[in-house]
Image: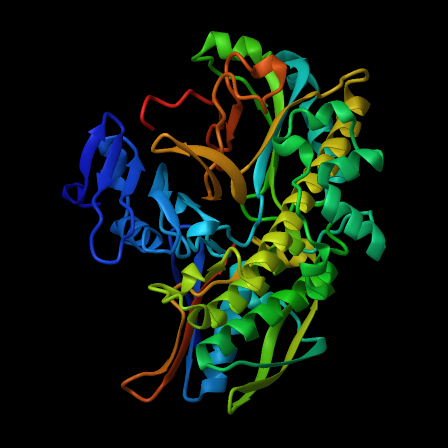
Length: 137
Length: 392
């Protein structure tokens, strides 16, 4: 599983790649956290279960990341570990994290939502899955 | 930007002619240098916006336009509901009614310099800001509905600021037509801890000094002079607005084909203004505008309290409050005819000129204060709305 962020003029792109779709989705989630803080600073103390479904894979990515944004905003948490399964348009996941500690995590930005900009979920030529989009900060 | 895609129509105005699927031309307000510095993607996005049903006159871009979601940031587009016009969640953005509010302090630079340490510490302690921060106010379901319907007016009724403030807010602090029933439970949950919070990212509360005056007449009307200290707030509708944007962007993107709207770019997710979905989004968006106006009113109260502790007797009257991510129903003259239009402004601010009846009497001679917030470390600007040139 690999993750990275990419440039967008006003906001930031998040990208995950992996051997499976689930890995790519987990990567995109880690990239999402990296926009806020260093994921390595977030201890996986507490689990939150997330489930979503969408008619298309790219919408499922949007839903997955938006569900994390919602969980972070309402629970005042950050996450660093993601166990994801994706099958037939449905995603079930367990996100591990902890309460926001401003001093320790030094959060840099708040993700407001997930856009359809640069939205792509696809199998690459080398067989790896890619999941990416731009998030609004 | 390839400037040859545009013809120059005025010293700071450029037009891209209709082509392809465009229903109207695109117009950019900028100097040649600013236009050249823009990404080509701005032209592409303007062409896409210009292809939306019911668009009137032109798709506009402001001098600082840049690549956004469907609409360029710094984009303006008006739609006629009777012509099948649409409303676009992407054209308003995730931070509905994000805006800027500036307060005069009656203090001079030298007054604040002496006490800026304690002032900064107190503001930092009193103004909830940053990821994970929470406000003290908790609203019941009825309280939240009242806030969504009445905006800054609700906040004043709750003891945050005074009725005098409302005169210096667009729409006098509340937009009509808010529909709390169109606001999801998730949006309400997201707002539960966030009333009276500043947010994060490029949101801020900044204590500023008037560094230079370019228009002494307008400055006098706004009661500003070089060396005056002012306070500016930049924030929006917080979690409620962000969730409304999220909810409706998705719903509109999925529903668009069924409305017969072929989205050139899915980020332009929109719905006909007269469709049930269009009406629901309009009602929810208006609720979010009211939430943003209420939120800035609460933050104003908190800032006033902090200032009064450090500078007893200081009052912080409101100069003006503008929003820059909205869709508002307005009357405009287009080709000599009055039309009722739904005007999207994405990263763009309305600027009523002199004589406009909605302006407070104190500003009617010079035009509306237009507040352009800077980034951290750069200057902010206060402009005055101008009268349109003939034919514009």
